[in-house]
Image (tube, rainbow, N blue to C red; front, side):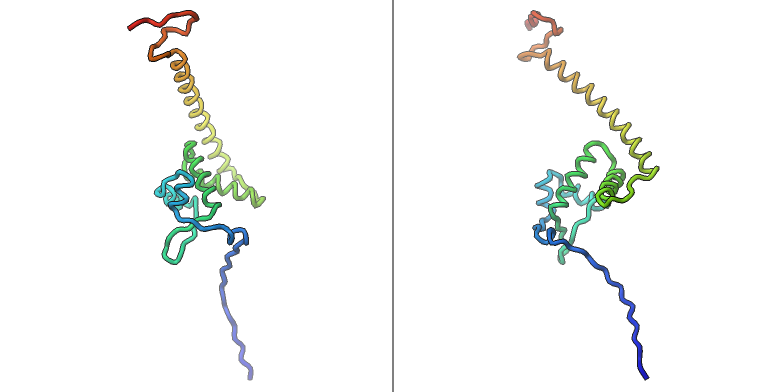
Length: 158
């Protein structure tokens, strides 16, 4: 009589490229120093699902060069006024593009169009503010304000 043994094994495999093995893992403080982004914000990005750090056995986060680039990308998008929920969608879309997968659903396209409109409004406002400051500076010399940018006009004495 022979006995048969069946195994039910689940195996998770993590693929590690040789390029990554050569990279030096750094702590969150070093990422903050390299990017100019506060450690608190880096932790927030992780909590929002925008960034995934590796963990050491003691629980410390470790990051590679790719993480530094991603933090800079996230910070740039957030500074441009894009909400983190949309930053996540954009990053996922960029990642899908690199994998040559379909990237943009109708819902995502609608969100992006709405965000583009808001960005253009902010740009218009900033442009007007810049022009106002530039005009003021052009009309100001040595602490005195010229009443008009007329040629040959002498500033009034105080």
